[in-house]
Image (tube, rainbow, N blue to C red; front, side):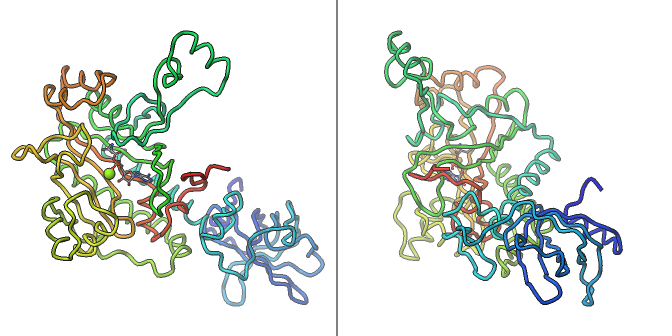
Length: 442
Ligand code: 4AD
Ligand code: MG
């Protein structure tokens, strides 16, 4: 009985056996002869009811306390599995009046629990979301493993601003002596990371491209940082991005196919593996109708035309409202392709028949609008050389010199994906410790 998670106990249903559970009291009803406690161990949505005879109930057994309980697994008159306790051990009492912010009678909205990041994993909503997050990561790895992609760890410290949007955080040592020594060596203020201007990565793409040109299809899933001064419900300073790079990719449709299959796989698998968790977050969450239909594709120009007919066309990059209008119009996820070159990053490949456009895509979905950004990569040495934003990217250019191949890839924001999957309005509830402008206290 090494593994005694509550979900496993319930699944095994070994009625009559003496069983031990460890967890937290999520609900407690005290009656004359017995108390009834709902115990959760956090590892699943499954709770177990414990029946505690009067003589075993201690004062410390309250809502929120942690407990170890032994007793006989029984079936209630209604046929529900429960434990009739004969040993109750309160491991950590929880004095609610001492400032514990949750109680079982009130529904705590996410804005409220967000004030207690260190305690909110005790709520149904956040624990369910974190379990779903863990499952989604597993499904992502399964998807790429089954297709023989190699998982690559790209660096977090980097000298490039891949997206060129000026949203990088600069990294410096926090040590007076080190800084003094470097200044004495003649390094300028901006170059204090041992002589190089260094950032937290905004994307692992350029490094992924290098490995792709030696190992074929690759992917990475890791933390990414953006110094966007945006406090919207969709932006974080630190988020997790899944990035994949496809070798010998000559056509943006190849990219679209992988993205669509990936999304449908994650949605289908997670709705199976975490059905109860999804229910805890949103009882109304139904299988989206678009799961069984092909995603729509629009070119950027077609999307602008649609927005014009709805009185919302501007000609520039889409704002969130416009993205959601397009999703609504198409009845589900929509790829927008063939973007004006000057709106997109330097590494994107020019369209074959229109040099004012690049072979880029955004995937727009309900809830979040953009959830994926991707493109074919400029693989022509001379063209790339003209667009290279910095001498320090000479290595990236050189990739096009030796055994070059056409590649394409994309980045999917894990937190935004969770928002779409679970219908979560604010991105800050999809990870345990969100970082956004002016918020990094714990
Ligand atoms: O569109 P983006 O900027 O694309 C790239 O970084 C490419 N280099 C990816 C690639 O081709 N390998 O970002 C990709 C996705 C966005 O669509 C969005 O889902 C997410 O990353 N994202 C953010 N998520 C949360 N907070 C932010 N501040 C985000 N910025 C981007
Ligand atoms: Mg983008």
